[in-house]
Length: 502
Image 1 (cartoon, one colour):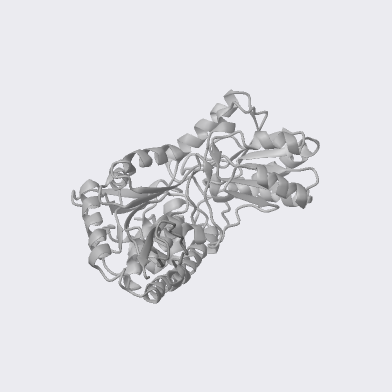
Image 2: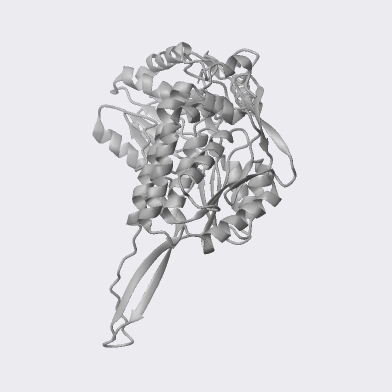
């Protein structure tokens, strides 16, 4: 349970939610793990336990998949009208909005992010995603197709396509935006008529469990949404490999994404992957420098740098390099680092001790190889998983801090000569998730955007997300697109129907 000092800041709904151990949702019922095991989810600001959570494994995954299969094949979800499904999803969004404060506090306690960010971004964006997807339920359409069959002269055919739900979907989500990533996954799956087994990250299961409660209250039938909490090596692996799952959707690291892909090969289930990034953020000398500096700082320090599309490689044109680096460093020094529940906090802790070790290891590696920390470069304090916002210079392309995803508030600043010089440098990575461009020359910006191998390119802005904008990566940043109309392809099958009519 949360410490006394934290308890005093929480509303009664959150205290009540945390007062009892959390269970698994299977077939509309909250149950203990078959093994009876539990694990503690921790407050990363204090390193202290919040609540015990059921530790699901292969047996629980089997039960959840069976429930999802029954709900898909025999339940009312597929036979509902599209409008009825849309109303249920919209009602879930309404309930989430009514519980905005509860979601925000749980997200902050479990993940560490500032409460102000959870209130302003995580919860409202998740609500908006469900509403956007609720609108798609009545717009998932096939098409009529004129065909020519030369070997049957004079024959007439009616040919059309149906777009149908793919079936039982396994969804494995990360810990950096727990509620928002659940929405990104669940919204389109529910809209298309699929049934789901959701596995939240073991570090941050709480907002998904509250979402499960509200889904039942919204009238989403039993078995349509099942939630199995547990560890990636057990519950996650069992889901990815399960022979009765039709599709697996995973968001997380590229390394784990490859394991998910291997596990899915058993029954050739469909796979979508939203994976890591090492995104270039390019500042030209003709940019609005003040705006670019603030944007570059936000690009890397937002969500403590625990963002797959973080602008972690900052490329700055030679003649303004020192000015921009100084500006971003000053922005970093002004960031107030503290516990997420403190309303003055601008950056909370990293999510776990494991993540703290990872980020500190990368900083040590960079400094050992010759990089210089203009600001930051080490852990902040001794309690809680806090890290100083860090700006590194004197790096080279072979350094791990330049090539590998750190997933923390660490940016490498690198000078470049001109637009031709930057293309090869920006694309010199196994990733291709996002990129940023800062310039007043819009022609130059669009020419560069066309040459960057990235699923999203922001021009004179960064980290702008909308339910209507597709999001995903090139290269080892993943397969498929989340959000927008494009995401519907991940959760549907296309069936061609051809009838001779004359």
